[in-house]
Length: 211
Image (cartoon, rainbow, N blue to C red; front, top):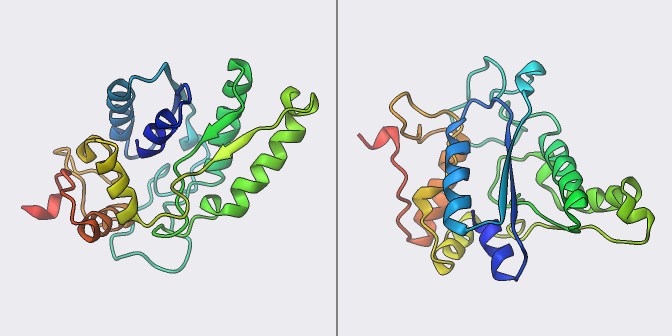
C-alpha cells in the first residue's frame, strides 16, 4: 500500500499486480483490491498461480505457522523464490505495457530474514532484466524500486500516515483466525505491531489476542 502510494506520489502510472498463489492468508487479496481502488490505480490484475502445487512453505502447505517469535533462521513461512517469481511476472507485464519501472515493497530491516528481500536480490534482478528482455536487448534499462527496503517498520507506518493512508486497509497476518481477525502472534503480526507501537500510530487491525 505504502509502496504504491509512493510510486503515485512520484508521478508514475500505477499498474497493480496481485498474485493469487493459493496462500493461506488469502484475505490479503481482498485487501489489495480495496487498496487499489482507494489509490485509484490505472489497472489491477489478480493473477492466479497455485503455488500449493509446489508446497514447501507454511503459507502454501499444511505446515503450522510459527507463533513463538521472530528468530534468526529463515522461517518456514518463506515461500521458495516467491519474490523472484513475482518480480518476473511483474517484469513481463511491465514490458508488455511499455513500462520500465517496477516497485516492490520488500524490507530488509525489520523482517523475517527472507533472502529475497535483500538489496543483493534487487540489484541482481535488475541485472537479470537487462539480459532477459527485448527492452534490455535494445539498450533500455529496467529499474526495480524498493523504497521501503531500508526503513524500519515504524518509519513505514509514519510514511503511511504522511501519505494519508488507512493502516487498517492493509493486511499482514500469515494465519488469520476464522472470525477474520489477525492472529497477533505470527512473525508478520509481531513485526507490524512493534512498528506501529514504536511510531505511536494506531494500527486499526483487529488482533485475536486483544480479546
